[in-house]
Image (cartoon, rainbow, N blue to C red; front, side):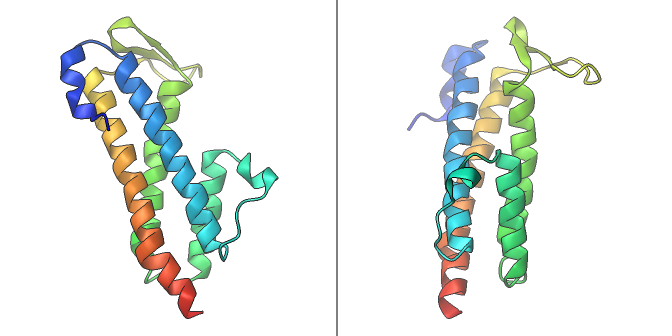
Length: 150
């Protein structure tokens, strides 16, 4: 797999690390779908739920987890909170306008312009991938065993 840390070879290139952010976010959303199915008693999402935006799926997962043993699932709830923050950052990138040199202009008038670097995008892609891996781990080690006891 391509590691975002290899971005240094493309200094100044924003497209490659932004692509990794997008790719890893898609993997994370797929893992969230798997987590939701597990939390719902191994029921896959229906067609309407599949179309929900990530934020709504995330809120639904948090609600399902809170209905179970929140002490056992505390690490999962922390990971889901982190996922929200990471996807807010991702959304600012992919729903804004990213120009040469890292100038990021939001499509919302009240959000100030900012700058991003290839390294920042690489770090974000790493964080999203890591968060996806922790969702998988919590599903396997916490959710499935907890539901097996019920």
